[in-house]
Image (cartoon, rainbow, N blue to C red; front, side):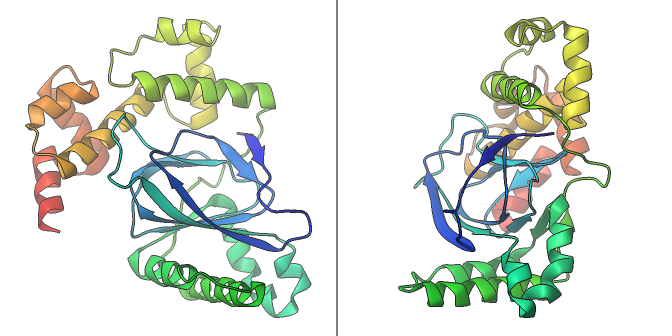
Length: 280
């Protein structure tokens, strides 16, 4: 899937370190002409990378290669106390060709074309390396090299996008995907009608279903279920609401359907998920 191109760095710069802070993360399906490292510090939500859709939260680090479309976004109207907060590091591919000593990182760069997520140990080291406010570019470069070395040494990375993923959609199609996903993010807690969604993007229901499956590797209802369960996870973890009330609030019409869908996606029941969260 092709997506909106974001230009992050000034021309000629090999890297840029920033801090992303927002009340919530809106859905923005985009890609870069560089490599991105994203480390959430506060707040949780959903992450899309190529044809992958899952959850993100503090305690992880993400590495995206050149041109891999991705999005981090908040599901539902709830806001994390203090807002969302993440370290972001963008690296030019030229860094690995202009500095001979960094060519040993080329296998890592190649793997990142499908997106990689690292666990708590690697994420902590990356976050610690990026946290100090460097006063000089030289010091920042040292931090960048520390981050890359930590990711190179880590053996626990998990690949996100599938082997067969390709970014082949034109800008018009990419905009249509953004519109469909935006509609579903706004209305997933309601009774989503294919007819209404199809009219929203000026397509027939059948054409919409084929297009969305081809673009995301998921059906519309599968995508809606993941949005609903993702929001339910947050409510289970952060509130004392009854499970039945949560099921209704996120858009399920029956508790049995909610329990069945939740278990299919999370491999545990909502009650067990809440118990594990509160004991963590």
